[in-house]
Image (tube, rainbow, N blue to C red; front, top):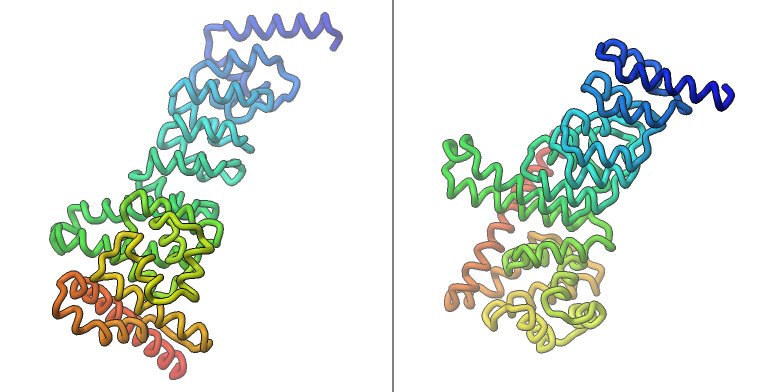
Length: 346
């Protein structure tokens, strides 16, 4: 078209946009939804129409810019937000707007869209806003790019939801339910700490520190399990010392230096020796390149500090946790052995 012809065509479309019959406007939306050179003013008018008309334009039109889509999201109409979530692709800025103000259903649709570019900060924001929503939480757990500290926070929310459910309370009681879910969350967090990349460990440690989760019980679990990198990062965070200094003490430091280090992270003179012993056990094994497992570490700790446990209640409580780890490890080893025998027999 020439310039004058295009102007006349746009004027005609503007008249159709004002037609009182929704069928006319719907036909207009169907005809223009995927046209790259369609008049922007007409498309914006259709995007503000009733849902049947607006939906086609919002979901399909390549003419709508990110700013247009962000305004639609900010408008707060969940049905229109869902059409934005269906677009292919969805840019980082549009996804960020959805993460910030989008309705739960729209955010769930966004997470289902494989052509969405989601920044890590947007994923965090979604977890903050909808971590208690079971469907969104499940979608976040499935993401490979979910930051480890966000995954741990979602684990805590999942544990709280399970502990508070009517089924759990009626089946095993509220207090036992809380204890079981707390232990499950701790074990899941420890397992996650073993698999995350080295660059993500400080973020996970900092999240746990801020949440008050870096307790002596949690730390002794990590140390007995041999997760030395995570344990060292936790000590760095709690002590305020630099990483090289902490690792130097853990690898080569004398017992007096280790005791001072553990006192610096808040362990009393009663609990610090238990941590020193566990550290020395792992250090000796690593120097000899010997195979050492959690069962051996926990067994030695219980034997070496049995007398301390009789005299100091705090040590006795910590060793009860160690003993629980010991039993859990043996159950796991027994199941693994039984499965291996069954596989051989088959």
